[in-house]
Length: 260
Image (cartoon, rainbow, N blue to C red):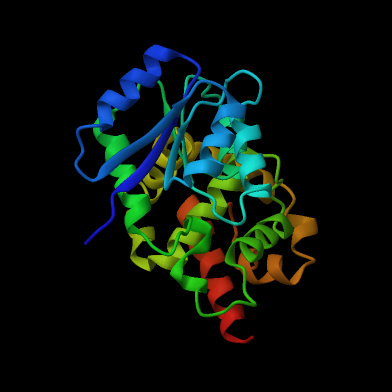
């Protein structure tokens, strides 16, 4: 028999807590374990109940949402729940920081209850727990970290890690490694998937990846001195499109992984 999905709701606003609970409580496979109004209480409840999912606001008293995720990762005996951020703080740098800190999804307030319910189920149905950066492409090779290899590659190609498009490009390349056909419908498949993960629009994903590629291409003379630059940019007479860049990087990674 399938176990219920055990959930803790953490938000300093009592009305939002009530709304979140009411929005998901009627799902027969969901069990609301507890609610919390500050970060310290949230950490204690996670240790006590070991939930599957925590719906977490970023702006809370005593300890904020980022601090909660950090504390749980450091002091919860490896039993880390899925964190879904539900917050009004939706600037892109904040979203990126939250996801880098361990959040699985980011929902902006106001949010779609149906979408939230679907994401909770998707996370808990996909065992073992994995993110885009821990795809099945690397499951049988513990010496190969696809995220590290991808980030290393695009840095060598001249895309600065501080750019928003850097993170988007990494995810786009990893999705292409996992689902090669996705590159054919990049605007209908890859951009929306990344946009949903980061709480932004597909158009914004496309634009920021393009800016990152433009920055890399502006350094072409120096980049061409590297092996990666020669092999990926060598045949290009003009700046590659997003799909060309993403596909070339994924093909390069596949080729060099096969030679390990």
